Image (cartoon, rainbow, N blue to C red; front, side):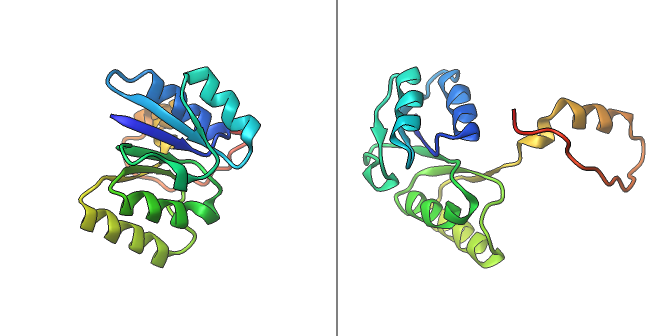
Length: 147
């Protein structure tokens, strides 16, 4: 499977490393508005750089969208319409209507659309879940950054 990373910030780098470790996955490119940041990630993984998602080659199977939230809908629509499977960072879009449109395109094109809810795999959340024997209401604030 050939996959591209769209957005070379923290989450894009995270997903690039995970994809590079997957057998049978070729990182086919990195897209970012910042050429230096895109080049750094692409060099690390030995793949090409694209300055726009519109330059992604036709023979790409999947895209990870890790751009600012206000671009999820635009970029997601373009990738899904091309028949790419898409992992989009949360939130899926800025409005419910935009989210519904992405879902409809994925269903019509018969491709996977997945939202990156990675916190559910956090060690802290797993430890909390293991200690709970019945549902409770928990209000929490995150006190750390992405790193």
